[in-house]
Image (cartoon, rainbow, N blue to C red; front, side, top):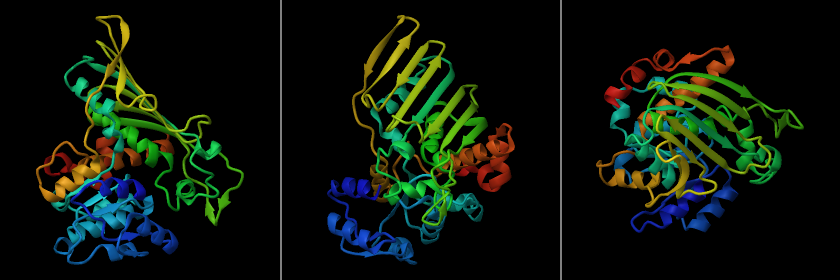
Length: 356
């Protein structure tokens, strides 16, 4: 993701990366040389000056491993530095308890729920908001990868970028915090907020229990049923052990006027629509490209006039749904999201919609 952001920012005329961080000095030097970044550090704390917004740094982009997300977020809040972060936002979850709704409201924060960038997804959301399918009653969200077994992105034994995702020492609830977070965001993006969730989690056996001194104990498969506040039933399936699948996201939405099929792996610029009125499937082409979240972030640094971007509300809400899914799997029953959020986050959750 560091290379992703560096590439995209290099295309923007009025943006410069002035410092980068990587715990590996060798990788840091290679990265800085590749993107012509003048300085680097192996300690992320050096990126966040005490003087905050008065420093020459205008913002931070956090694409570190999950376990550092909470610490880095807290440091940026304390220093009043704008932050663009990979999901999930708060790891560990208790990080949020130290913050107040007012602090979060004043802070410029964008979370990279990147599936919103896909033209077909943005088009479908607008179509649903206009009542194109009528009352939505069911949705299926599937995100299938197979890299744990078929090594599509490189053998995780040899590639640290994939190995860290397999251990709870680094990864936030495994596939649930990775692929699952995108699906939870899409469920809310399309249908509003979640009422209840029930979840089953699975971990497959690898050839060994440990690798490089770390337990291979993160979750590989997640199967969830969400009841949305509007009554929509949503099936969420996230897996990284589906052999033969490289990066397959699929969406099926059904309402009383028809259904939508969406498969970005096959086409990011179109989707399939079936309307009862016409009685057949048709392909709907999508024009335009939605702004990417790093573009929202840069715009936000320059001006407070930004809207419809995933920010602190979406980030916290997504974290609550993830944590509720884990508790549901552990306890074996359905979890009420509002009660769970109130219990875990208290005042922040209570004031989430009113103040943030």
